[in-house]
Image (cartoon, rainbow, N blue to C red; front, side):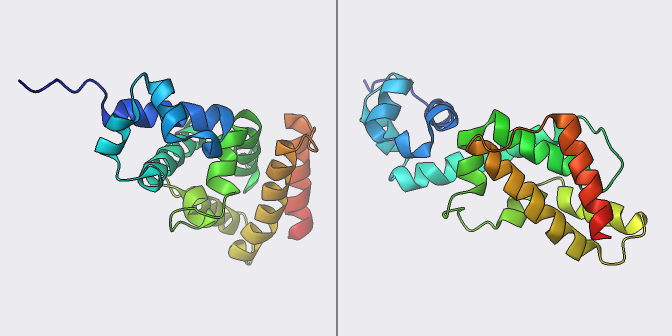
Length: 181
């Protein structure tokens, strides 16, 4: 009689996601993952051909996590790109290892930063449309200017070089939007 499989793909992916969230994806090896999941490496390689395949699923789970984070982030401002910026910077502050995996890694599994940021909810498109509705003559160029500022601030938070409070960040984003007009 065949032995019942007790470790599922979800178990492995959830354990890998937890490890990547806490320590970074570079620390997710077959052995460390097996220890975290409470199994040997055999179930991992029964489910995944290799660690790269697991990495792709882990990346997609991270993208879904960011989408959910964005959807649940409170909207506090009507100025275009401010809520997106606040959310993105807060995500980097709260989830530095996931931020690195999604937004600061070279391997994004065929997705651009724009694809990830825009997500399944069309976050960037909504902000660009909002900018147009607010009278911005070139909302796509405005997005690029704001994005450079927002991404830079988020990356600075990873190294501890960004210490503005939320209200200060909101003011900075509002002022930058107005200055870029």
